[in-house]
Image (cartoon, rainbow, N blue to C red; front, side, top):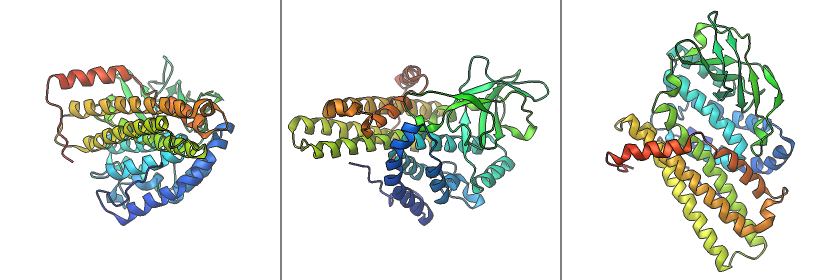
Amino acid sequence: MPCDVDLSATLQESPRITKLLQDARDLVPAMSGRAQILDSEGRFPALDFDLLRDIGALSSFIPQRFGGLGLGVDPGGASELFALLRLIGQGNLAVGRIFEGHANAIKLIHTFGSEAQIERASADLRAGHLFAIWSAETQAGIRILDDNKLSGSKTFCSGAGYVTRALITAKDRCGTRMLLIPLEPGERVGSTGVAMHGMRATHTASMQFDGLVVSTHDFIGTTDDYTREPTFSAGAWRTSAVTLGGLDALLAEMQQQLRARNRHEDPHQLARMGNALIARETARLWIERAARMEESIESAPATITGYVNLARVAVESAALEIIRLVQRSLGLSAFLQTNPVERLMRDLAIYLRQPATDEALTEAAAWFLERDFPEDDS
C-alpha cells in the first residue's frame, strides 16, 4: 500500500519538477532495498545521496532566479517539496532525515542570508555539496570569542563526516548567531559516534569546532534570527512529510505481510488496516495544509506557527496509532530484526521525538482559543 504521489498535481506544473519527482520515485525501490543493510552496519547512505545528487534533488533548492527549481525557497513550491520529501521517506527514513536537514539549511540561508550568500550557496548546491543544520549541543554549547574563534561542539549531528556545508548555531555576547561552516569530508568529527536505537544510517556524531576562526561572511542573518517565528516552527512540516513517507512504507509492509500469511481478509485485520489508513490520511491532510500555511502571506506569523505545531502533534499521534496497529496485526514477527517493519518502527520512534511537543500543543491551543481557526483556502 505504498503512496502513489500525484506528479500531475504540482502547483508550478514544471516539466523539470515533474521529471525530478518521477526520477525520485524510480529510486525508491532500490533505496528501500538497501535500507536494511545500511541500518545493520550503521553505514552512511552514500550511494543514495550520489543518486539524489545525480537526479538534481540536492540542487533543486537553487532559486529560480539563479536557474534552479526553487523548491522550498521560492513561492509556490511547497507541494512539490512535500511530494519529494515523502518519496525519499518511503525509500529510507534515515536518508529523509538528512535530506530534510539539507532543505532546512538552505531555507534558512535563503530567508536570512544576503543575496551574495544565497548566490554562493547556490553555487555550492550546483557543485554537489550536502548541507545540514546542526543546533543540538551540550549546556556549554558553542561560543564565539572576541577574535571570532569558536569554542565548543555540537551533538547529534546527522551526516557527520559527510556534510560539507554545515549551518550551526553559536552564542556571542548578544545572543544566538548562525554560521555557515565549510567542511572537508571527515573533518572535525568527534572520536565516537552516537549509538542510536533507530536512524543508525544517519551517521550521527558530535562535531568539534574548538579553535575554528570564522569570518564576517560566515555569519547568516542577525542575532537570534534562528529562533525567529514563523520560520523556526513552520518548517516542521518538512519533517512530517518525511515521516509520512515512512508511514507509507510501514503500511505497505503490513499489507504485503498479511497477504503472504493469507490473513488479509480476516475482519479484525481489515479493521486495523482501515483505521491505519484513516490515521495516515489524517496525517497527510494536516501536513499538506501546513505546507501551504508556511507560504501564506495573509496569515499572522503566530497563526502559521500555531497551525504547523498542531499539525506535527497530529502527525505524531497518527504515527503512534499506526505503529500500534501494525504491531497488533503482525504480532511478534514485527519485532524480528530481519523484518523491515522492525527497522521502520525504530526509525519512526526516533524521528517522532521532535523537541517540546507538549509546549507546541499548548501554545497553539492557547492562540486559537482566542481567535478563529484559519479557514482552508485550498
